[in-house]
Image 1: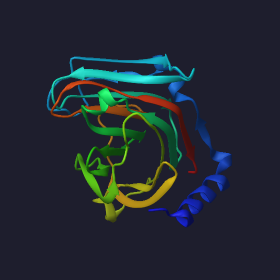
Image 2: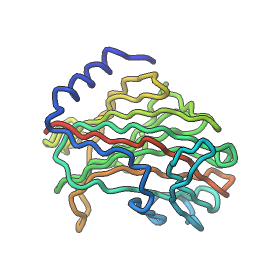
Image 3: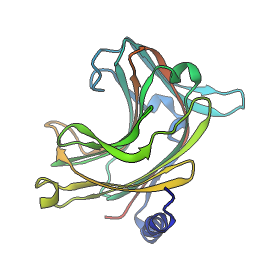
Length: 242
């Protein structure tokens, strides 16, 4: 699972491209900057409530807490816009904690990064399916791709450190159904690293959408329904290179 040479090559690229860097840190420290979307999260049912706020834990840490409740297989998307970027290389890094009462109702833990530059939408979707594998997103086909062998090992009542490396090719490619390619390069879970090497096509940007990039987290309920929430800290995004 550990793939240090691949990781070092990505880190070297980030260092060499530092002059083009856009770095957004502590995205978890301003809950009011996040937007809640209860209608486009793809669940089979509609959630009944959702909120996102900053809370102070017993340790004194201030974290962000997205939360929802609803029937079985309902989902809620929480996203934060970060502006416009022409960068092609991205890293998102954060810590996540799922309390046990929420963990019982979790279907998947989804953490994404998106970059929209007309005429293309690049959606770097990644989810950890409880009891199964990590998945990557194919935006053109609107479906998840199972990252076979990369097990979802997020546990309840523990902080997990996650790192995601992505990049995009803004040029049309015959390797991606004639569209530009979205690349999922590397996944780090608790400082264990796996080279993903998943390539999927991006999709046309929907009419009326503006150029934008940012991050999101999605809460997905399983067949239990009920309450779902998580804590996120140290949420940081770095965008590099053109």
